[in-house]
Length: 128
Image (cartoon, rainbow, N blue to C red; front, side, top):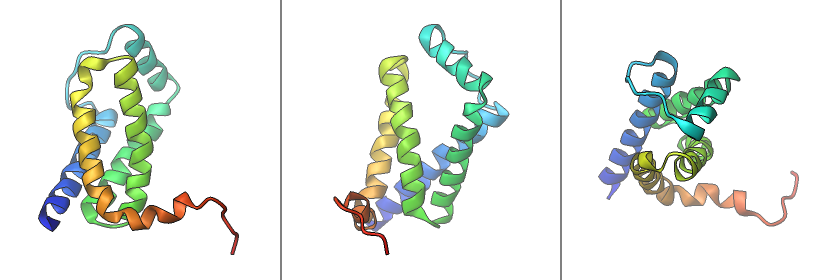
């Protein structure tokens, strides 16, 4: 079981590092999306919002690959993954299989670490 978790963590890290770097370097050719998805994608690039998204992907993916600050990387990637899923569900359903697979990988890595996330679910936070 530990081996499967390590493999899932490394695969998740690789996916986000490679696709995040692709956002900067464009080494994986893909046709531009059309319709509403294309408009959204264009707005992300024109506003430079994509720099933040791809930067978070690369940094968090590297954290997973290096096995450092894994809970923090998972929190960062949860936000990115939620947006990727929302994008594909609402604007480009044809691209949904990869985000669903990545979500399964994320769950495989996050579930064994759920005790690290417990403080996030405190009903009343008390300052130290």
